[in-house]
Length: 274
DNA sequence: AGTGCGACCCGAACGC
DNA sequence: TGCGTTCGGGTCGCAC
Image (cartoon, rainbow, N blue to C red; front, side, top):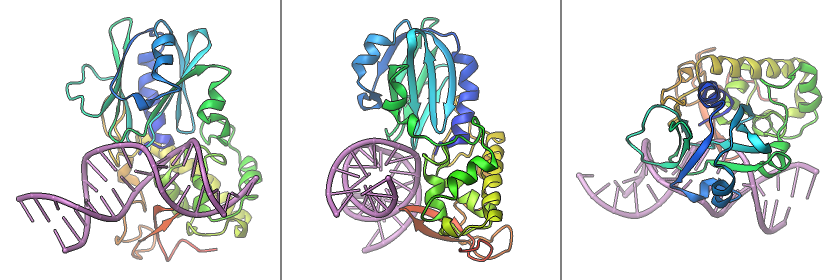
């Protein structure tokens, strides 16, 4: 599922393809994908030029001409595809056609993904981007920033790692990886963490996400990049999906529990419960 | 304000 | 083999 590294991977590929392109037509196969409504896209999108493409948390932001902004959130199974002509159009929700006849496809197996179109002064509020916390890659993510914010929180570690209003971009897979790397049990109470723990979490967030970006993301649950290719980071995951297998750090058998309704993988031996 | 859960959605995995 | 059931993910919105 696309988390920060997967979204970053997609952007790195679509950006050079898309900058300067002008929207011409839009073919829609799933109306629910579009907010506030499909009509807004029909009225405002044609003729708009793509000036910039960037990311905040898991959101992909297209800055358009005439102060419009289009935002894409891939949620679970969304994919933006730019490779040639797509023959198999199963699960396709939309097809953006540009003035040079090139196309951008949006495919989404579970149809959770959303595409928004708003004026520049509205999009932050309407998409929820204004509620996002610090982005560990594009923002000034310093130890002090992190500790000031994170140490004040209540509840268990994993819940707070998943909270997009604290750190933006971490999802279920990387939350487990970050807890493992920090040698902390995902159910550890944030209030009981000491300075060393916080420092470990801070550097783990950075290292886990940066490694995943280097590897073009993790291809679990259908993730493919904009050219339809898989990432490699699934081969580097330490705990996620490894229930019953040996811990790579201490040889103990890894376990799976539920935290906040999410499958959660951890080592009961070398991840300390605080 | 904070927490928790259902809704959205459908393929895969599982159970009988 | 074949059918029905459960699961899983991110985020919003709604109860408490």
